[in-house]
View 1 (tube, helix red, strand yellow):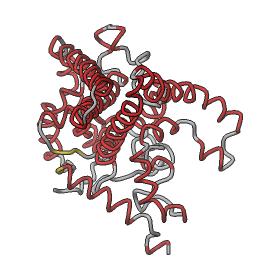
View 2: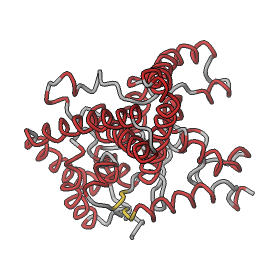
View 3: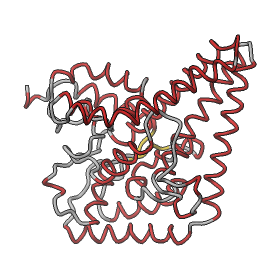
View 4: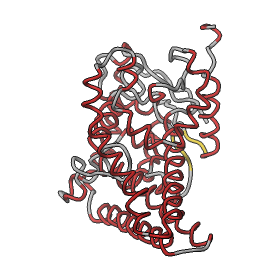
Amino acid sequence: MNTTSKALTRAEADAFGRELDAIRQEVVSDLGKRDVDHIRGMIRLVRYTEAGGRLLLHFGVDPFTFILGVAALGTSKILENMEVGHNVMHGQYDWTRDPKLDSRTYEWDTACPGDDWRHSHNYEHHTFTNVLGRDRDVGYGFLRVTPEQTWNSSHFWQPVTATLLAVFFQWGVGTHDLRITETLAGKQSVAELKKRSRPFLRKAAWQLGKDYAFFPALALWNAPRVMLGNMLANLARNLWSFAIIFCGHFPEGVRVYSEDETRDETRGEWYVRQLNGSANIEGGRVFHIFSGHLSHQIEHHLFPDLPAARYPEIALRVREICERYGQAYNTGSFARQLGSVARAIATNALPTPAMA
């Protein structure tokens, strides 16, 4: 896998961008029934697996139905967050004018309020992808995932903190836009933190009440079983989404940028940065669906508002363009990318030799 890109002149980068713009326009012109059928089919699958999972947890008494219930409910939560919520909230289906697919009002089944995510992810991350000091998704504010980040003593423990983030990932994402570290550093007032916290606390109370009070109470004597089943389903969703997202952003070959490098950036240069700041994960159709098609993180960063189910067919053309322009197309198996991420977290827990 070649992970080194040729440095492009501005003219070359702009030509690269025009070819990608042409792909985007072709897809936009072709949007229609199959795209709507796909997302509505995914929404139905989310509902059916949730209903099946909850029924198995509520009325089952044996370990087999418990395992099936957790698997079904975990499947529902993964698909709702990854293939439905994430993609709808990116505006991928706003063109349908369907209120249920409106990116501005969709609220997903996770602790992060939709408006917070639309700001921290849609705006900050996708605008300033991998720009140190602007993209707060680089290490989520407390992990050092690249040597270009300044090391401090807290990073020594990051193999542990990264594991905890994986286990409680929805809560890490939910608190991300609160900017707690900025308050601790004196860059944000306590009053502002309290203001930012209100939507999150409301959403967190809803999520906790739904999974650990309301549904267990409905199960009466089966309440402990339902509570444990919901916890394991949430855990499965957290671990899976953490793995997919980190594999798409922090494996070997993904580069970061300084603010100076991106000053006066053209659209073509923005495309180049999105490409160099992302990585794909290889797999089959089911794997791609369960990842929310973020297994095609490169295509997602190039075209965040195109229906994600289109990424596999787009990828073939994107890769061919990258080859012609000497640009690395970072892709690998799930095991390879996840192993690379684990090495980056472990390696960057220690100061680099130049900083020692």
